[in-house]
Image (cartoon, rainbow, N blue to C red; front, side, top):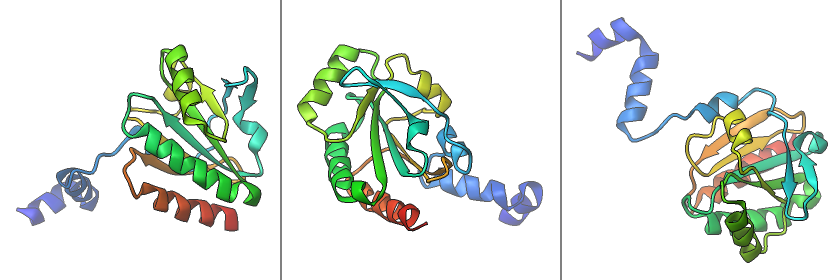
Length: 172
């Protein structure tokens, strides 16, 4: 049966079926890997706009989150520690809330006391550019502005994968 399927579809189809059968989901955001990161300008907590392209030359971690999705509190605390550790080495961490309720998103951000910039995209405009289908999504962008990693979802332990990816990009 497998031989027949291989001849019919080739090995790529088998790989996709194996991944899907194991519960691995493939998201459109991963199509960004290897492409230039879509630029954006969003307002931060202080009301000032930040533009992604202003950070060209640095490694940028963009974390798209919503207060209602997953373990946002846990992930923001982990990213705050990562920011404190690697900021001097050239890492920029940006949090982007895609909550439609800006008031509640700002209240949530204020309660977190994160040291890195938190930006607000209440209309999900940036979410469309980044093909966000599930939350949270963490995108790592190299010094040239190219998306190198897309991490979908968050669970305890994922921060170690972020650290490996960040260290690799900072060494380049």
